[in-house]
Image 1 (cartoon, helix red, strand yellow):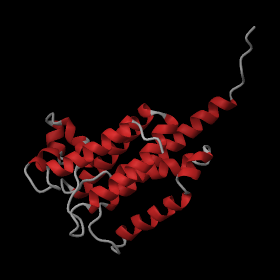
Image 2: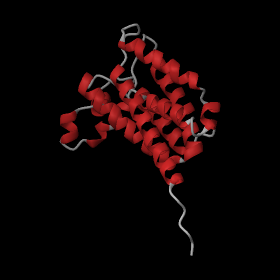
Image 3: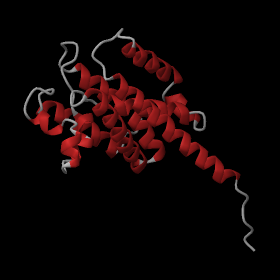
Length: 197
C-alpha cells in the first residue's frame, strides 16, 4: 500500500479532530456538527466536518477513530496509489457530502465519523475490482461482504448505536461512482477510432 498525501491528510485530520474535541465531548464539537440551518447561513464547513468527529463508542475511547482510520488508510491508500490524489479527494468530498446529508436527515446533529466515507470506498473498490483485478488482490471481495453483514447488523439492531443510514448512503455513493466511471471508460473504449488522414 502506497498511501499518498490525501490519505494521510484526512487520517491526521480525523485523529487531530478527535483529540481536539476530546472524542466529541467539548464545545468545539458543536462547531463541527451537521446543522442544515447553519450551513444555509454560511457555515459551509459543517457539510464536511462531521466525518472528522469521532466519539466514545462501546466505552472504549479510541475504538471509533482507530477502526475508521485503519479502514480509511487501507482503502484510501489503494485508491490513491492506483488512481491518483485528485480522484481520491473528489471521492472523499462526494461521499462525505452525501452521507452527511443523509445523516443530518435521519439523525439531526447527533452523528459523526468517517465510516460513511469508508463504506463508499468499500463499494467503490469492490466494483472497480471487476475492471481492475489489482483491487481485488489488495482488498479481497470478502471485505465487501463482511461490511454488508456489519451494516445489516446495525439495521436489525444486532449492533446498537450505529448511523446505519450514513453507512448505506456511503456504500450507495461508492457503487454509483464506480459504475459511472466504468461505464464511461467502456463507452470511450467502444467508440471507433477516427482516421488520422
